[in-house]
Length: 323
Image (cartoon, rainbow, N blue to C red):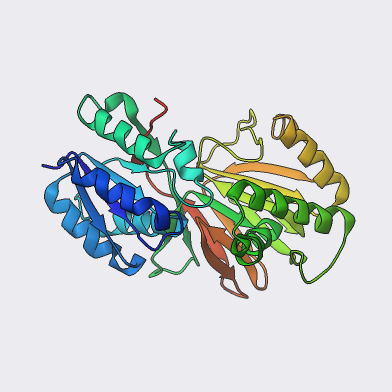
């Protein structure tokens, strides 16, 4: 039995330089079963094959799209029966939010070696449970797509802007993200409009089950089940329950400036702020004509009569390197 199964997508941006090192590493470690796919369409077949070797840990090596597609197939395909192995994610790709949440940072090969060491010992202290976000259009036969981080409203437009306009420049990720944030601030706070800047957000309506509806134009919309939150956002002390964490910032200069300052000092979510909405719930509906959201790198769009519906799954086991 292989202790570790590694699923790699050679077409992921980060693997263009990393994969030769990954292949050499796996050739030297017989307890690693390495499977490569050429497209996300092959992930179902890959998991069926991996299930035959009964690994103790399933490691994902790819970008956001690879992770999102694998989590969806792993959850719906039931290739491992009722006891799937815990999932680990290598720090590869552009954003690495899931890897960061699980304590995987730095060199991917160092993280992989750490995973192998954990697999050789008692893994229990490193197993953590995370709910996934199930995205659908609310139809009975709709197979939900699963992920852990969703960006919408102006944030989705900015993520697409970064992907389509900034990443092709070939700059380091940190600089690309800083330029995108600067462009977002110029657009949202100062109202500057230009073809080389992100577009204006469209109006959107967001409802949280049993907690009301928020309607307007928002610069930022985030829904996540991650524990290590972004933008300095902290989970507020509240009696509201629910696995889905929602944050929205209205497209108003005062709200954006206040949220930005609170984010810099790690205070976002600690207290109420005008134009900043933080909620928790177990069902979130997003409605708006051609309102885009991005779930772990994949684009979805709400249309008239077809809202985007978000619900949490049952907890899924993951492997944390931070434990």
